[in-house]
Length: 196
Length: 34
Image 1 (tube, chains in turn red, brown):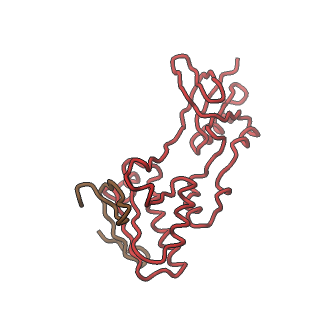
Image 2: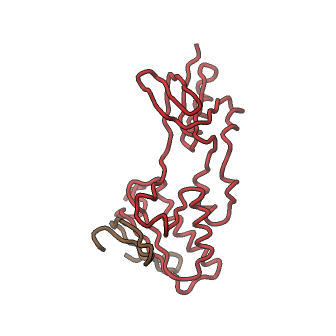
Image 3: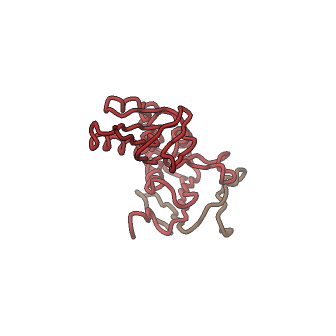
């Protein structure tokens, strides 16, 4: 009987694992990817959305496309992982597994920092990238603070990349005078994960 | 610490944890009252 591999999460980790497993396992196993909304967000492109170089719809891909690769796609949030009985419950029903890959990712929690949601923007989500783009495009002078709220955080280069791109965008628009930028971070140095 | 970024001076402040954003003053409030 064919084995079943469940992959939870349709982000970059889940999609790459599912595709690689599909190739390695051949017909000896079913590969099922489960995602809460059936959409893959191309996260590395969020900063391009922030820059206005990509439209929102260009960075969201339908996971249904994986079916052409022989990967089964289930849309529904995971509600329970029963490791003992090797079963996952989702909004779309329950699924038994022989092997399980958890690639559910991390979500930002702006509500945990007082005042953030009312004042700041974050390019870590699609909506946030659009909001950052709009805020930067309206900026005509003053001080910009780019900050890392807490450690650890995903994509360690992103805040630095964002600062550079914002600077680049302001220069392109000719907003040069009277612009100050401050970068605040709990890290002891930029992109510590890359080494000292 | 100040770094020069493409001709624009950016103030780099490591080892500081932001605690909140002051909506009225649009200021970042840092841990330890910095």
